[in-house]
View 1 (cartoon, one colour):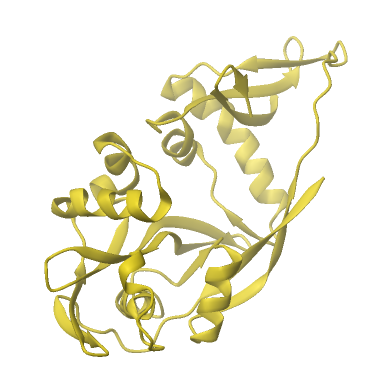
View 2: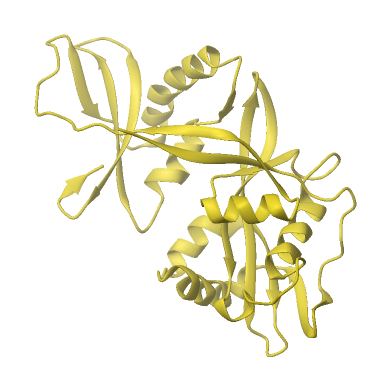
Length: 263
């Protein structure tokens, strides 16, 4: 079974717009600014209100700490965060050439301000401010991309902020309890840096070479450690596929264990 998911490229205004300034949406006054670690409590509060999920300090630090993430926020006149637009830096191989990009995520608008009847509402304000200061020629990131919901794609396109670059296919299939052929073996990767780096490096180099005519997100050992092994709210393990007993690793798989099962 396959499921189509949107993939987008996002384009910001040519000139950066200032941050830490007041802005008006209709008759309402807001303040827009970059977010930092001191805003963690407000970000987590808005996340819970918008998505109905809660995360602790470890999750926030894993995703946004130590310069890993960037965000712009919109504050109402009572000092509450009501909109949030964030991204995580990613390196892409664009036909084999490394490109600095940012992957958009955690786009949030509080329910109480979604109904402001104007094209340049809270979503528009945080989105354009993020792009204008961070994305484009001569800025930190050459491009931005994301995998939003259908509703967010339509809103972004309507406002002239997003471009839908096509779809990717998510493949799913039921795994039958059968053994591999005798000369193949799945085994857990030893989770220390030296061993992981050695086992992952060859597989990643081969993948990057094979996809040289495409755009590919870097999946080296640093990315795998951060994305899977360091994540505090999910338990992942890495496995390798190789010819038994002395063959090289030909594939690496991250598997999440939860509720007595794996995915």
